[in-house]
Length: 201
Image (cartoon, rainbow, N blue to C red):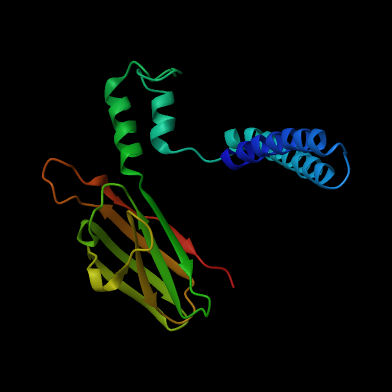
C-alpha cells in the first residue's frame, strides 16, 4: 500500500510536469502527452492497489498479541471475560508464546518435516519434541527430549525444523513443549501439546 501511494504521488507529479513542459514548448503532443499518459497510468494503478489493500487488510491473519489487546482491559474492545484478570493473563501468555506446530511430508515421500514456532524459544535446546510415526516400513517412536542444533534447521526467526527420514510417512503423532532456560518463564504449554498429522496418498 505504501508503494501504491508513492506511485499515485509520482503520477500526479508527472501530470504536473506534462503541463509545465507543454507550456514551455507550446505543444501538447510528444513529451507532454507521454508524461501525461504515464502519470495517468500511475495514478490509476496506485489508486486501484490502495483500494484493494484497504479491502483485503482486515481479512488477513492478525498477530495473536494484537488480537489479545483488542479484548484485554487495556484494549479498545471488551468481551465477557475482560474482568477476569487470570484469564486475561492466560490469553496474554498464549499470545506472547506465539506457539504453532506444523508437519509437512517430503516431496519424495521419503521424509517429513516437523516445524515448531514460538517467541519463547531462543535456542533449539528450549524446544522439546517427541513423536511417533507410521510409515510404509512400520512404526517408530522418538522419546520426548530437547532438539539439538545439528538436527534443527531454522529458516525463520523463532522457527525450528526437524527433518525425519522415513519411507512414505502416513501419520505423525507429536509431543511438543517450549521449555525456556530461564526459571522465571514457565514452560508452554503447561502440558506438552500433542497434535496429529495424517498424510493422504
